[in-house]
Length: 448
Image 1: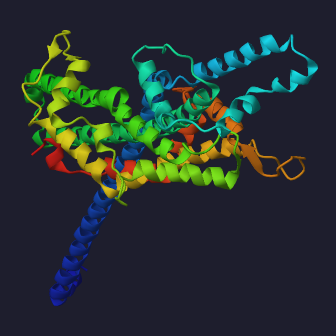
Image 2: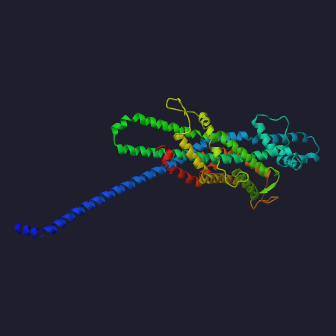
Image 3: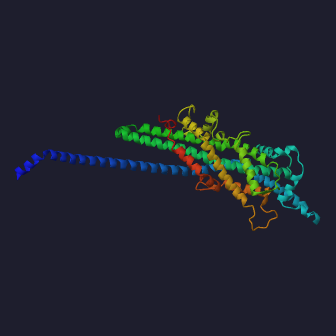
């Protein structure tokens, strides 16, 4: 039996060796393929988890931006409302109506027709010729109120209506534009920082895994904390630059807006009947004047409204000093270089990009769409009986505009107002935010 087996092995030893080699090779090949398969599976799972993590962080970043926008809105809108006190002009018009009603009570019945509503009685004076200086009445009035002066002479109803017309529209446009810029700039800042912090955390985690020196990490814990504190201070300084829009940038924008409103609406009598299409066309003309410089068809990028000139950067930082963990103010000898400089330069590059100009335009358009939609509620439906179908007096529209500004300035961090909701739902804004968040430009992160 044994001799037979030995003979069989001897006769077929080459075949057996080849077969054994093939079986062993096949085993190792299968084992290698399995290991590579599991390695690929692990890598895909890691990448998928990383993408999900990045997506969650991105979505959380947008929610944080909305919360920040609504937290900053009262500071901005309060200044706009103070600069254009439309309600005060309305009170002056109502006071004049009261002055006219008092003597009217003792006159004959033939004089009673003079007791009309403020909308009809006050605007009738618009037909009378006025001096050329009335063209600048609204501008002068705004300056007088800013300087705290009430004026020594009483304004006529014509002057008051002219101020009401210009200032109510200027205030509405200013709120829409500044809200749009606040939404854009807050999203831009937080996505730049969110992306920066994410990339830094990934790099540091990779470095720790590569070194695999737990003891050394424990020894270097102090320097790691110092690095995190420095990063936090730089981030705070960077966020301080929103102060410019909230306190200075919007002012120059409002002046440009007022010039545009005067250029379009100055010659229109408040008692003029306007169709919704005509009013929308006037709104479009104002928007074009705001977005384009005289004689230039290229859109403005609003850089000067969002960021200060380089010579005022230190001034902006001084308005909201950043302190360290011990409460000591942190100062920079210069912002001409370093991580903060890179953040500001990247921000300016994004603001000047064609994508940013388009996004801001879409944000403003969404706000104006809500604005015109609210005005459209004044226009009668097909079943209503009206003297002039489809047309409403500008004076009535102005009253609606004044009421809308309350909505523009309202809302809470957990419940944004209708205008802010319309803006943050603009698809182009999400696309731009994703572009910023995924722009892993290492040179701008200070990680070379």
